[in-house]
Amino acid sequence: NGEGGHRRLNVAISRAREAVVIYSTLMPEQIELSKVRAAGVRDLKHYLEFAIKGPRALVAQSMPTGLAPDSPFETAVIQILRNHGWEVHPQVGCSGYRIDIGVVDPRARGRYLVGIECDGRTYHSGATARDRDRLRQHVLEGLGWRIHRIWSTDWWLNPEGEVKKILERLQALMEEMKQTADELQEDAATMEVPEDIVQAFTQEDTKPTEHGGAALPVYAPVTLNISGPDTFYEFRTASLLTEQMAQVIDGEGPVSEAVLFRKVARAWGLERTGSRIVERLKTLAPPSVRKTYEDATAFYWPKSVPHASLSHFRIADATAASKRHIDEVCLEEISAIVLQVLQQAGSAPRQDVARSVCRLVGMSTATAPAVARVVLAIRALRDTLKIIEADDSIRLNN
Image (cartoon, rainbow, N blue to C red):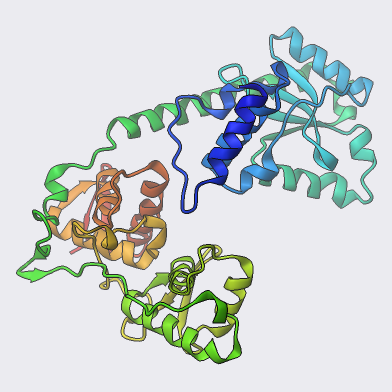
C-alpha cells in the first residue's frame, strides 16, 4: 500500500510482454476510496477493475469527489437516505458525468449500488432537452451505472411516495445482486468438467482423438518464414504480407483478426501489434477472403470451409501449440464442438457441456466468461432447433 506499493505495481505491470494473470483474494469493490488518500491504493483498485472488466473500466472509474451537493433538493434526498441507514456520497465521478448521489453497497463499500440523478444544476446546464433527458443517462448506464432519477416536482408534491420508490429500488437491487452472487458461487463450486464427457474426446498423451472410428481434427498452427522488422513497411513486402495472411487463413481459419495479425507480426520480429501494424495488415488482407463479425471481432474464413459451417472444428491435443482460448474460436466452430460433445455424451447439463468445450479447445480452466461465450453458441443451436433443452439438460434434436 501507499506510494511504495504504487511504484512496485507499476514495475509489475510494465514488465509483462504477453499477458498478466492476477490471483487475488481482494476484490476492487472491497477497496473504499472514500477512506484512503494513498495514490497506490487508488491505482490498485483501478488496476483490479481493469483486469476484470477490460478497457471499459478505464472510463467507468468513479470515486467520491468530496464536493458538496449542488442544490437543496439533493441535500434533502441525501439526508433522508442517511436517516434510513444508507451511506451516500454526493458528486461521484469526474468531468461532466458526475453522479449527483451515489448510494454505497453495504456489502462491498468500495462499490456503488445505484446512482441517483436529480434535476439540479447539472441537469439545467444541459444545452438541449436531449442532453438533459436522454444522452447523459444513456452514457452513464453504458458505463455500468444503475440510475434512478428523481424529479424535483414529484419530490415536492409527494416526498413520501418518492422515498418509497427509492427504498424499494434499493432493496430490489440488493436481492438481485445476492441472487447473482449465489449463482456465481454455485458455478464456481462445479467448475470442473465431468470426466466422462472429457474422456469421450481426449486420449492419453498425443494420440489423435477419435470418434466413430475417425480421428477428430486437431488445431495446428501454421509456421511462417521469419523476416526482419526493418522491411515490414516497405512497398516491396506488401505482396509477401498478403501471401502470409492467406497462408494462415487457409491453414488455421476461421481465425480471429487479432491472432492472424499477431502471428504475421511475430514472424517479422515485431513484438507488439500496434495500431500502425494493424492498419497495414488490414489494408493488405487477401481481397477475396470471407469475414464474419462478432461485435468488434472479425474472423477470417478459408475458401475450403463453407460459410457459417457447423461441421468444421478443431480441438486441442497435448501440445501447447494446439491450445486456444475460447475467445479465439468463432461461434460457428464452438457450435460444431457442442454438437460433437452431445453426439458422444447424449444428454448433459448445459453448463457441463460449455465447460467441456472450453477444455477441448485447450483451456486448462473453464472460467465463467469463457463458459458464458459457449452458452451463447448453445442458445443459438437451441433457437435454430439443432438441439433441445429440457430440465436444464441439452441433447441433439435427432
